[in-house]
Length: 315
Ligand code: UDP
Ligand code: MG
Image (cartoon, rainbow, N blue to C red; front, side, top):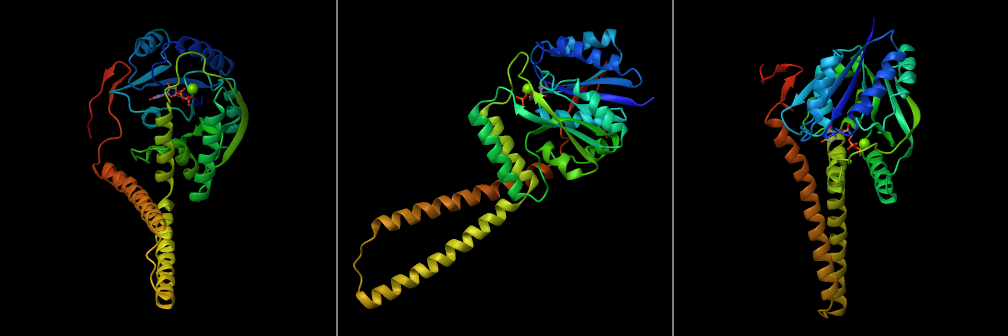
């Protein structure tokens, strides 16, 4: 019998958990020809989420959980999930039921047909604000232009991954993760299915504006180094322009004499170039920072419990 893992990162989801479990039960009952694992990754919740998961496990041994030692963020929580899944395939899902479990029926169907990565594509974006939608589209546009791999807009983490994709993702241990980019990087047979993303059932989205901005920067700097190239090109452009500008002044002074005007031009050019330089330094800094973080060679996360077992970090 093939085994399907439902991988669910949870962070302060006590309000939705029992509802989610109910819907998952429906799902697993519909497909009793598979063996099921429901794997919760508790990402440092500060409410009763972990207690609720433990209760679920007492009555249902298909429920497994990994408890991380603190909040590491969803991207890292998913990596932990890849490390602990035991299924022949793995479905990544949000705990807030924005990803309808009913869609898994179709995913399983495509999986049986031989697809490795069946992703859900949002037809709408739920109750997101106009600004957030616009910003998100702009971000994908920029990312698409900068990196050579296709990163699909309106596709989240909700997807079914064959075991070989999971193994591939397990080997990608970078800390600053942009998992959406990684899904695209690994390739394999992909298939998209469309769905309507609903609104969050209860509780609060953990993604504020700055968290999203960080994710956007992470997305770009972890998928491509083209900002460095752009900085280089800008530098070359400004250097050549200023060379000709200087030439122009030289000729003008020789022909007409010097009138010592142009303070506004001067200050504008200085400030503009100062800005461009700081921006470029910042870009370089982003990459140097990433190098710094990765060279420390720390584990990406620490898990403190796997089901009833306490874990330490060994290797
Ligand atoms: N999540 C997590 N760690 C975090 C933030 C979120 O594991 O630091 C989980 C959360 O419990 C949920 C999923 O990631 O299952 C998506 O989170 P959320 O609904 O807040 O994101 P959104 O739907 O707004 O993108
Ligand atoms: Mg959500």
